[in-house]
Length: 231
Ligand SMILES: Nc1nc2c(ncn2[C@@H]2O[C@H](COP(=O)(O)OP(=O)(O)OP(=O)(O)O)[C@@H](O)[C@H]2O)c(=O)[nH]1
Ligand SMILES: [Mg+2]
Image 1 (cartoon, rainbow, N blue to C red):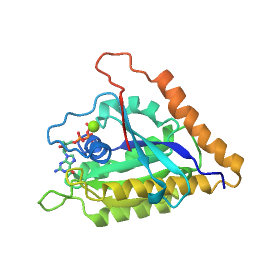
Image 2 (image 1 turned 180 degrees about the horizontal axis):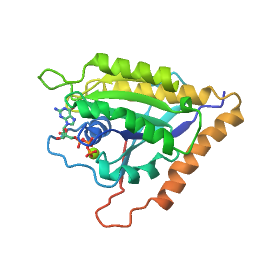
Image 3 (image 1 turned 120 degrees about the vertical axis):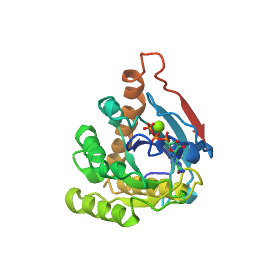
Image 4 (image 1 turned 90 degrees about the vertical axis):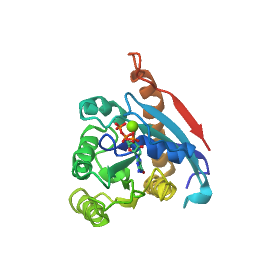
């Protein structure tokens, strides 16, 4: 066990356009929600600190949450943001069946293009079914999410917990990110020696901060890459 420290962990949001990825980040990091939000073009990231009171660990975490474009035509551009990722938030819209069907393609796309590990259990995952505040019969049921997670366990040996959430009311959003943070900590702590843990964490860090900033700085006007920080 290494001495307590703050770890910077990179998390990426994945899911179809319109499922609410940007709204979920805004609610979680800034506690705001807007009905009037445009599709994300380019990338952005926000930082959010998780205290050790919320973690089953002596360490604290700074989550670096990357927001990407869900539009199909940008899928290949998203690939460069898969570098150095520790955790993935998969999102579908409970009122959009296609967004649920596409989850498989998002996780596959990530696993094929990430550069960190051939062992898929080295990544933390959670699945969010968003927009549960809506007062209409849902098109995607909680049972569908449960079954999907069971399939990931069976066919890919990946443990994924699901959450029914709302970016509008904030329901279960904090719980979901704490679950993901604990999962990522478990993965780090499962590394046998201090040295293994350290190189595992530093490997992430080097790739997510240094390389991304060097390679991915947008050249075109209108492609934004700003950051927000919240505690
Ligand atoms: N009722 C309700 N509407 C939501 C919720 N989350 C997002 N929305 C709405 O859904 C629409 C899409 O939300 P975004 O956050 O832009 O979706 P996105 O996944 O970031 O989409 P892309 O950036 O195109 O990939 C917006 O009109 C939001 O106001 C929610 O929890 N409840
Ligand atoms: Mg967005």
